[in-house]
Length: 327
Image (cartoon, rainbow, N blue to C red; front, side):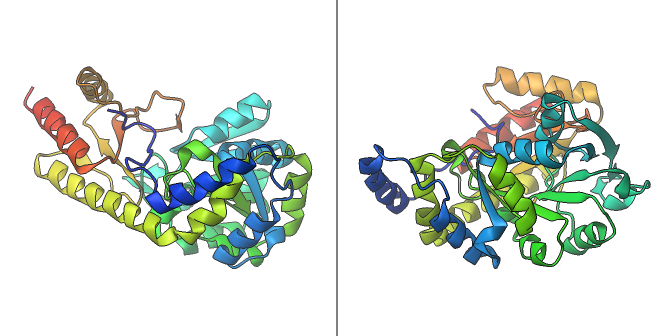
């Protein structure tokens, strides 16, 4: 049971699949290299201009491009998504971690040093792997008081209904990353995009490969936006499964962090208990993510992250977790 990489447990809506299938007939042609239509649709969704949008082969490609273009000195508030650090290593860029978790709360106030020492700062909101949200005001105040570029990775924002995307119009050092992998459950199509000042976008557009989104992915964007209400219903089912799972875990004594995502993170008493539980679940055929996975930077060693699946899957996971409690 794969509950590690926070994929949607549900297939896309049938209407979406049927509409997307029609694009198969045009696979002999390249997509429009400017992705003009996609940028127009996404700009309308976020209240910005098409010149404020750039698309990537998943958000991972954009993380690489941003690192290459602006990552001379990188600050990574942790715990967080591991790709920011991996991109810095791949491209031999200087970076530093700084812990922003205190008493189970992620706060930018924990950054005591001047953020102006960095050229690029990565924020993941909602946080991955913790699941919690940094409030919009805290992010905007932080960006307003920094000369660095602040990248807010909103991969899970569709579950939180919290975004600073529209503020990129006023805050020129703010970059927002989005993806269709999580809230839309289209991880296999690898569709990511960024929203930023037109000058920043121009540098990314000049650096990206032509046709970096394939024809199927390019066709999927306007279709997914057309059926956005159906994808929202899928998210609601995931959220209901998540909330019910959290309630059940707390009743049997697990410490569960608050989540505005499609995963939950549990906190064990110590790193050894986390390792034992990870092994126990693995033997039961349940894959979850651990702090020693390169998916994360700075995740506390006594935590495990569990993606939310179907109700039947979560029932199975709960039974396994309850059994572990009795050992």
